[in-house]
Image (cartoon, rainbow, N blue to C red):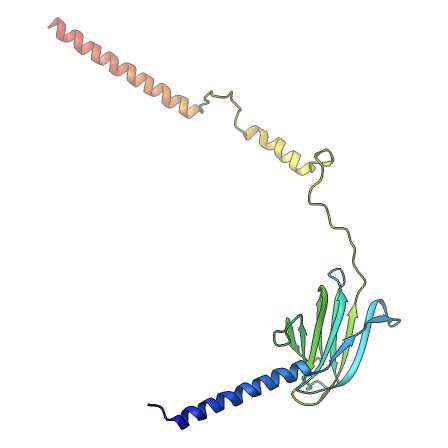
Length: 217
């Protein structure tokens, strides 16, 4: 049997671990989120943008960008001061623990994301140690380029010249159409048919000759 003291110790360890996990999750959820408001900027003639500068750490800085549409291109850039700085940038759609994009700055001192999304998205910028960074968020103007129609009326259909020529050249190779219920034979098939007819006639003549010979005997 298990010792009651051992059981109590194991239960206590599980309770402490669960409490720590809950505290960490609640800590993440309780972190403040900066609402990004993109505005027109003369430095970037097209679209709207926002600029942020700060020093991040393991807890990180969180941002939320709303009001985006699938017709709008989105660009995110995070810059660091030094080549050996490592800043992790996560693009999140819903769950902070399940980012849709996850990159870390390297020797080029930057991370770039390009995408489109509907409604909203979030950013989480962290570092293993206090590190300075700059964040640029750009949302482009809606691209309303018309999408080609899937189908057009038959009266508006124009057959490409290449397709018409191909069909014309292939017409000589197409099988000759026959009436419903009729049969068509190739030259080889006709030859085989004639050979079978001749063999049958020869065999029939041979049988008749043998019968006449027996009667004469």
